[in-house]
Length: 122
Image (tube, rainbow, N blue to C red; front, side, top):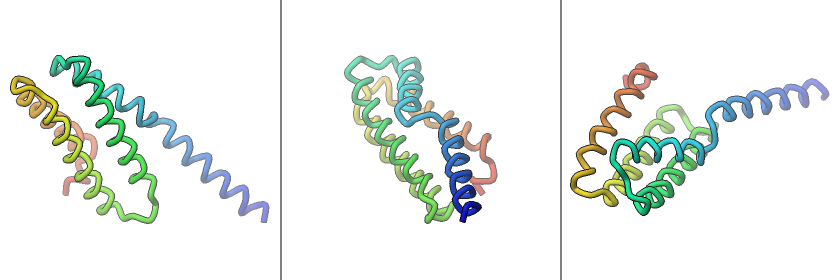
């Protein structure tokens, strides 16, 4: 019985360390909004609204990734849907001058993901 408990605790500890390295959804959202502010010259109102969208997206994606009952393909598919929804909401908040710049940001983001995880795109 001790071995089972220790194994379970070890697994939880390892899982905690894995998620701790990624940062919280709030931290990730803050980083994303800072990057977007630099690239798009967001107003304070846009920053606040986009932060709320991004933090909601990051939390949903984090929850999705932590669901061990889903297959990798299902997670990838649902994560892509979450990202598309967040992108659409953000685009609604942007000016006509900012929209093409956001399109470039999306292309760069997707290219970076492809470089980091080439096997996932197959």
